[in-house]
Length: 182
Image 1 (cartoon, helix red, strand yellow):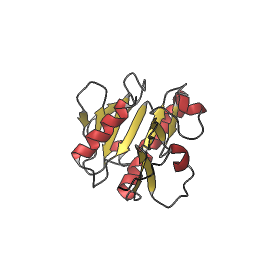
Image 2 (cartoon, helix red, strand yellow):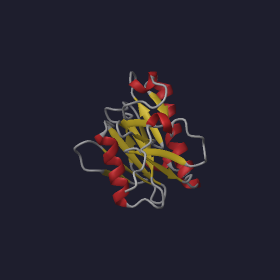
Image 3 (cartoon, one colour):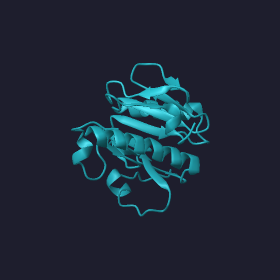
Image 4 (cartoon, helix red, strand yellow):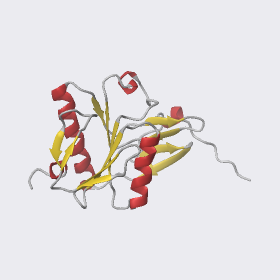
């Protein structure tokens, strides 16, 4: 019987950058290739939009592609495409991997993601304390919004995405999250 040594979050953070996105799931290293152009451009647009909101309103902090320790022994460290955390969130004072999910997680759907993959990842973030998850899909120019104990809500490019109680005063036409011009 062969036993695989599980990796810890402390070991993960010391790994050299090999060009792959690296996460831990219950101690097992998961490596993913860099996303394609549509994914990257969309992720940047979501991040910039949230950053501009947070900066203009002095409300919360935005980060991207950094890890959050969601479980320990064995460790799970996941990294959303974009994260927003409310003022006072522990991540603002934490070096390394904060031990709490962001308040808002933005994930951008990759072409290889199945609907089941998307739903499972969104539910994982909610299970670990995210208040909301937005899943952007560059292929359909849509955002699916996940909230605890609610059915997912999919907004198409003609809809308006608002921040509700989480991001007071935030609203943007969905199409603007994917491109400059309609």
